[in-house]
Amino acid sequence: MLEPPTPGMPTTSTTWTAFAGQRLIASGPPADVILAARRALDTGESAPLLLFDDTTGRTVDFHLRGSREELLARLQPAPAPTEEDTGPRSPGRPKLGVVAREVTLLPRHWEWLASQPGGASVALRKLVEAARASSGDTDRHRQAQVAADRFMTTMAGNLPGYEKAARALYAGHRARFNQWTRSWPDDLRNHARRLAAPAFGKVTP
Image 1 (cartoon, helix red, strand yellow):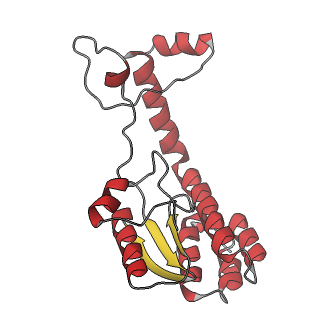
Image 2: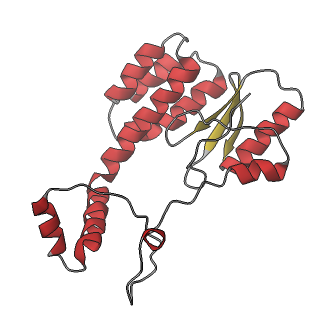
């Protein structure tokens, strides 16, 4: 049986996919996927059910027993503390809904941040957004590699061609990846290729 969800489980910014054995039974918003998985259980599905977060390729622990309302309620993550929760708000301070976390920097870093227009928080946000913009393609490429590899390790680790497919994935060789996954069960192969697609980008095989 799938276990209760872990705190902070992502539910809104990703898609999930459910497999019954090697057969895909649902892929899409988490709420739709868990309800489809529950229907599979209710209709006597005997194959092991696994839920995957498509963004990370990790399996998702989720308890599928209970009413529809209980299932959907379990999808709601615990709210993270915000600046409004962790400290008093000074006059005129906007309610941005930002999350307060500890950041450890060297004194010279804090001095530089404090000297920037808007203060340290504004400067850090601008730096993060600039870094995201400049490394977006690289980050998506790497994230797709990792997500596809995690999924394949779980679902195809014992299938013929797995190791060569994984090497092709990290080398950016789409044609070789397709070659070594060709003999896999249809649903498993197609989902692995879908997760891996952003990893290849415009790389020439």
